[in-house]
Amino acid sequence: MAGVSTSHEMGLHTEPLKGRDIKTMFKLENEGGYAYSFARDVDFNKRAEMDAEGKEAPEINREIRELMDQGNGTIVIRNPGAKHSIVVGILNRMNIIVEGSLGYFGCGLLDGPNVRISGRVGWSFGENMMAGVVIVEKNAGSTFGAAIRGGDLICRGSVGSRTGIDQKGGTIIVGGDTGAFTGFMMQRGRMIICGNAGKNLGDSMYDGTIYVGGEIRDLGVDAVPEELSDSDKAWLARKLSMYELLPENGVDHFTKIVAGKQLWSYDNLEPSEKKLVL
Amino acid sequence: MCGIAGVIHRNGTSNIGMEMTNMLQALKHRGPDSTGFAIYGEPDENTFIMRFKVAEQEDLSSGLKIHEEIIARKAEVDKVLKTLGVQVTELEEATEYAFRYEIQYSGDMKTLADHIEDIEGAEILSIGSALELIKDLGDATVVSEAYGLGDFTGTHGIGHTRMATESDVDIRSAHPYWAYPYSDIAVVHNGQITNYWLMRRQLEREGQRFVSNCDSELLAVYTASNLEKGLTLEESLKKSIDEIDGVFTYLVTTKDQLGMAKDTMAAKPMVLYVSDDLVVLASEEVAIRAIIPHEIDTWDPYEEEVRVWQA
Image (cartoon, rainbow over the protein chains, first blue to last red):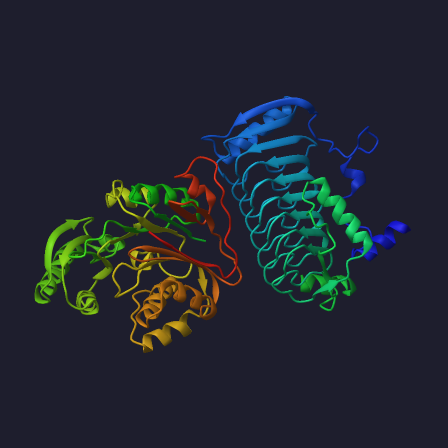
């Protein structure tokens, strides 16, 4: 049970998560597994390009799916023009390259794809992501990675406020600074902020871990610092190296923030009480 | 929800009317009820531009008598101007109920404003040597075409698309708000102010006047009050973060400045683009892209952030 003790050491829950039933959603007997039964059969080496100029969000999303139907496993989207709600609901393992910026609610509800955005993204980017790797090369707006449950969500620049609000899993990595209420009501998962964090960091977090490389303006209710363990340092160095964000001075200076768990413990409530509270 | 936008050219002038129209049209989905512009042309120290209305758009459907009343109210305004020794050098009828006067006046601005607004239905939208404040029901294109803003040249401007939540859908509650009685100062706001009544009563006791029940008007009156006390625009914006409760992002313009302030929760959006000669900011990047189509670096200002740019 070495893995369990390491997880505990890093401030994480270890009991199994409820929710999506892996056995009914995925065809585990298939080679490669972890694909939805309705996922398109795409070839990573088959590449298609599309121009989003002058098109509305539904049209762009429809076109992406048409290209996926044709077996394209790598899709390049040009001229996205900061439009809202595009590249959403992609449930395939595949590559998506966006050459430009996205508006609000970009890349929401993803489960599986690798996405790279060369520009900036607006509010609520990557919301509810389940799996995959999404990299934003420039800045991002507020509520970056709201309620994500899995995967790696990376912004090389700075992000707005309430980053990772309601995060339930996965990893959020920010190369620059983050604003107020980062990790607000965070429940699980990990977040790495290489720069500074705004006020009320980790406010009302239930669980999960936040690592901050720069200065923290102040901590939110029930967010407490904890000593950085060797496991933390090893994980931080490995994760940041993967995305070429490892600072020159290493990771020893990072501050680790976890939940103090002095607020209501929802896990101890009876189901009827839980319903009332939630 | 509401959408706000602003642009300031730091070296020279541009077609501000068209730029603001395009930006606000791109924000139409944030608020379809009304659209307003506060745009700044080349200032003329000897002339003030006064924009005022003598009725609401919805009044026109109240009966046939309103048309006669509008004529009578305008005649009353002309009479007041004459009495106060105001010389009208140019007169333009933007719509049946909204007017643009170029005036020469050296007296007290508050006296002028109070006398005109004493007339039933009359409301001054703005007075300024550079400011022209236009607001009406409809989207940006509709308002811009009705008021002929397509070829307006100037240095800076702010605008607003309104989704009415706390007060009526009428011109009185539309943004921007002129900071009565200070020439050339206008405010647009996105958010809700929760200590509105408390602050309003305080300001009213100080002698400030309110024309609507819209919480955003408070910011204009509050700014006017601060400037009257000798604060700079930047000081006023900073002070507002401590004194005004609620969630807000707002923009203020003066004759040659554009300022922004974001509340302590950073709950309302703002995207910022800054270059050596141009600053553009809007609730959504899609509005900035309406005037700068190529790839640019933009970011969100943080909580309690205050910025002021000079034209």
